[in-house]
Amino acid sequence: MAYTTFNRNNFDTFAQPMFFGEHVNVARYDQQKHKIFENLIEKQLSFFWRPEEVDLTNDRKDFMDLPEHEKHIFVSNLKYQTLLDSVQGRSPNVALLPVVSLPEVETWIETWSFSETIHSRSYTHIVRNIIPNPAVVFDDITQNDYIVRRAETVTAYYDSFISLSNYYTQLGEGTHTINGETIVVSLRELKRQLYLMLVSVNVLEAIRFYVSFACSFAFAERAKMEGNAKIIKLIARDEALHLTGTQHMLQIMARGKDDPELAIIAEECRDDVIAIFLEAAEQEKEWAEYLFKDGSMIGLNKDILSQYVEYITNQRISALGFDPIFEGRTNPLPWINAWLNSDNVQVAPQEAEISSYLVGALDSEVDTDDFGDFDL
Amino acid sequence: MSASASSRKTPRVGRRRWVKSKTFFSDAQDELTLIGGGATQLEMDLFDAYSPSSDRAPIHTQPIPEPVEIEQGDLFGYLAESPEPTPQTSFEGMEKPSFEVIFSDGRNARFQHASSLLESLEAQDVHIEFQCREGYCGSCRTRLIEGEVHYTEEPMAWIDDDEILPCCCIPKSPLRLQ
Image 1 (cartoon, rainbow over the protein chains, first blue to last red):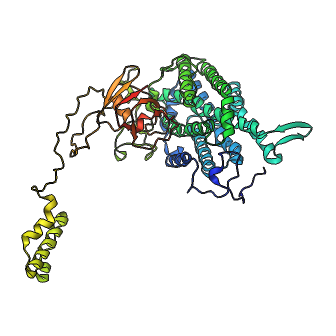
Image 2 (cartoon, chains in turn brown, green; image 1 turned 90 degrees about the horizontal axis):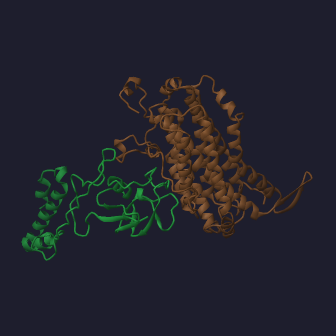
């Protein structure tokens, strides 16, 4: 089915699945097959923020004072976050928009991807503040073996789906010979790849990102790099919404509330889903090893971060209706909840620094002496 | 009649409603006197529903059950399960709900004053995972074995039919959770 930017067919919107139905024509939101995506769009819009609103002047000083191995942890973590958001800032658009069939899902994908571009912009903002030449950090992302290896698994499902989906859009189903290569295009295989791709996206947002958040917040728990943590807090708030979005897509598919064929595919793919989660968990543990290769930091080391990986993997896979993979894990970093919470206390919005109303509320006039009586 | 009405002082804003009805009453009384009716009759018609001698039951008769004393922890200096310092007027059938919440692992609590189930549990040292506290992240997802809840905010996170999000709901009955 060739892609059309404005479908002239008359069709019943409510009879369309989320993907691989009629191409969307009128961007209308008065009727919604899956109202949840409209709710997500509205919530995401209410979250809008800009990195420049957060003051990072103290972070520069903090960073210069960090010991070398902590600088390595901080910068490597930042590189990884940059990689993840570079992927997420474009891939949902490129992969999903050509095959989406519902206006509210289409707009959710665009809103979702757009907010990831804000995250990417904030990494540049952070790097500019702590390092005289940001290129040193960004150039390494494509050269550092540890990051490149992870980039491959993060993007593999996207790339494979996009490639097959391109053939489908141009040539339709069937066996085609392109440049001497035989390519079999079947809609069922495409749907299978779509499902697994969404699982890997969910893993990216719900596990990989959270491991990196834990590192960012571990610095701030010691009152270091607090401006950075403020930005990561805003990013974490967005990511919580994004992972809810992919969980809904996956569950709508698996429950057959959308496309009955996808329910069958989801059932067949259960082992693949577990494998994707397991692989990600193993990679995150390897990453923890790389992060702490030169030494740990107070409050976080390789073992604690690996336990957190197992805990968060259990949480996320059970949200998709699977049994936990790892033995009875409890949260080894309970303090992280306070950082991941969008608003720390329950008071009236006008009385508190509620992050939806106010960004950049960090007080930059803090002297290091103020922390003199802190005991760790 | 119209002459006496126009000579009255402008009613004060703070008592506007009361002044208005009296003005109406006085004007109507004047009118009735003119056509030979009695003032007493009119008073009955207008205020019967509010008079203490009426057959209607007063708005609150039954004693409100005493709130249960709960031992609670102090979260961020905020006691979620303390009664409000200035409670609202109590009406029969509109008492603050007070329900037992029991977990299958034996932990238990009593929901009474808190604004969400999560706050109530935290205040009583029953800790469950949380993150956004607004119903969109799904971290506090809990299995509901028995009972019913009311959502104060529409939950956005994915939850199964037998699951609840304690961060944005309050119990409607005693709860059994897992």
